[in-house]
Amino acid sequence: MIIKQSEQIMREVGKVLMGKEEVIEKVLMAIYAGGHILLEDTPGVGKTTLALGFSKALGMDYKRIQFTPDTMPSDITGYTMPGQGEGGVVYRPGAVHTNLFLGDEINRTSPKTQSALLEAMEEGNVTVDGVTYLLPKPFICIATQNPVGMSGTQPLPEAQLDRFMIRLSIGYPNTEDQIRILDEKRNQSAMDEVQAVVTRDMVLEVQNYLSTIRMTKPVLRYMTVLCEKTREDEGVELGVSPRGIIALSRMARAKALLSERDYVVPEDVRTVFKDVCTHRVILKPQAKMEGRTVTGLLERIMDSADVPEMPGKKK
Image (cartoon, rainbow, N blue to C red; front, side, top):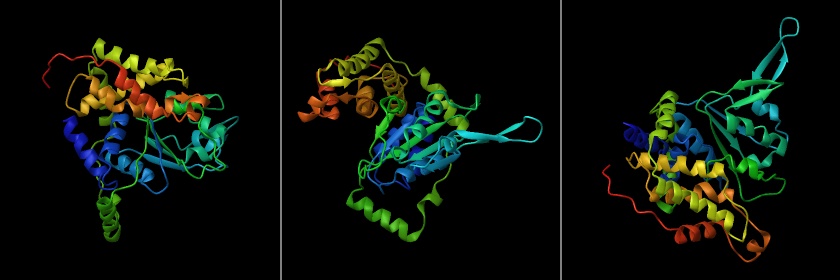
């Protein structure tokens, strides 16, 4: 049932983001894993469309903030104001009180406003004037940032980058997909055709079910060794954190689920390793000057690590 529903979800989102099946699948995997997604790409490739398509296909509430230098933390967390009665106050919820929150161009706002998302992303609640308010479940944050036009931007600190389960790039569509997009735009909005496949409660059930996907000790060791090697490389200033290893394990379980298995194999880990770890590794300045890249480092680590053999199992 989960596989059939997942295929339907990806098919619905594919109506508005054509030719990007791999990106759609990985975003769905991150949602199943209960993680947050950072989309880093040039303007106009469909980052906002992707988030809205998922909100409709998953039957989730959706809110969006276009981050600018004057966006305030209270726009995100909410604020209190005087209410009726002596000493009474009323809480006005902010934009994060939703199931799927899109922070558009998150690097264009101040560090203070960026940090307002930290509690929501890590703990699923916000604290305003000393009072903690729970966010709806599930809560998924999809943030975007553009690698071009960096003037006036504030790069996300490492602590906040680490709270994103994966970082993805959508990329430009190929020629045939671009023609299909133009043809769809000529007729009608494809977003109107996206139908809800599941409910938010069903998404929660899948998130809870994910913990039952088995991971053997050899696979756990393989996954841990891959991440530890990022800390041991002489050209690395900051390697993958324990939180990153947990994110990798949950993404690997989600990949196994979509592959119709109740256990994780090394290939599941390899499929998502770069998506989970690229934004968590920082190279030393000397390594950058030598032309080394994080992606190249992660590929070398995967090539050098011993892949455990899995006993024959049936799906």
